Length: 160
Ligand SMILES: [Zn+2]
Image 1 (cartoon, rainbow, N blue to C red):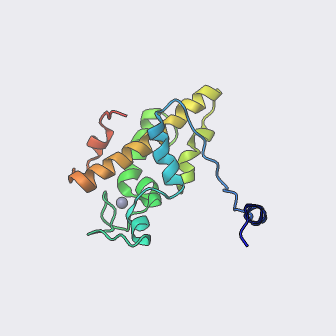
Image 2: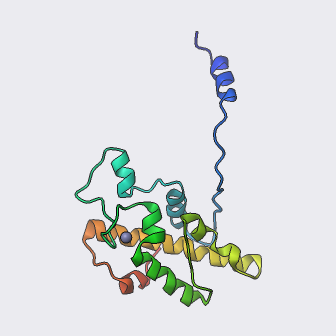
Image 3: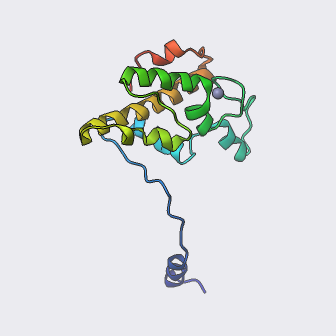
């Protein structure tokens, strides 16, 4: 017999896993910028590996930038040679130590390594969020509009 109370008791017994990482929102960037990073952190961007798991197959499942390995969030934002070059330029522009990320969470935690006020760290946090958004936008341009993979074009001013 189904009752609301029985479902409520069953749901209370289920212990959902608590995520290790709590996404920290930043109100100094547009929400759509933060949402891309939030979705990437949860592996919910429609990268080729995610689409394949949903039985959606594309002509190529390779990275849009380097074309060498299967596209995934981790590769697209962290380990792709194209994006690594981009992070190096961003690090030089910010006048911080070279940006080395071994995981997506490393990118989201870059602001923790910055000395200074809370506002300075908050301002710095907006940089990886915005870069992630720009990378995703550039990736979509390459995939859907056949744009050229160009570091110079990726660094051009983009409208958020
Ligand atoms: Zn790549």
